[in-house]
Amino acid sequence: MVERGRGCIINIITGVGMAAIPYGGPYLLSKGAVALLTEYMAAEAGPHGVRAFAVGPGAVRTEMARYLVESPEGRRYLAWFHDHLEQQGRPPEDAARLCLAVALGRADALSGRVVSVADDLVELTVQAEEIRQQERRVLRMQT
Image (cartoon, rainbow, N blue to C red; front, side, top):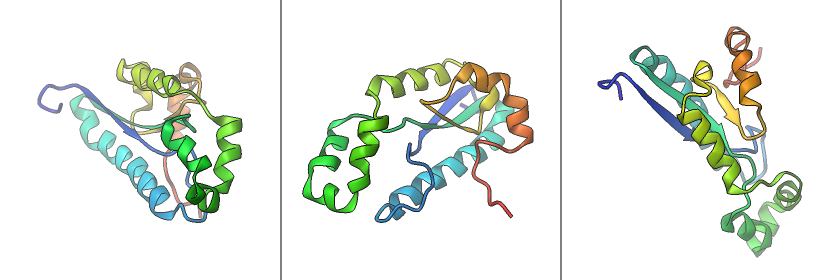
């Protein structure tokens, strides 16, 4: 991508966020690391025309999600997920549409940032400079 002078990296992160959820540590830690890695990728590859995004697909209604809410293990360790999926679950096509919009360049001003299926990309793009100045939509330690 750097040699071509263009490209788009889309990293998938969690729709749950970076909350401390019991039994979710390894999964959430890895997704948080991917969000931070995305920011670094954008900073390093951006001058070469490569954009990078951390995309949160939200709670996607898939066979895996169904297993998590119906299996004995899921009911035991992720009991909260049933209500979350019922209230906020989305079809896989929503995540696919967001990834396509990002890949087509509709969010280029937000490179290095987290975007999710719940976002209005047009509105976020309008606010991109403010988002960048305020260091929003990235992982930061608040002091």
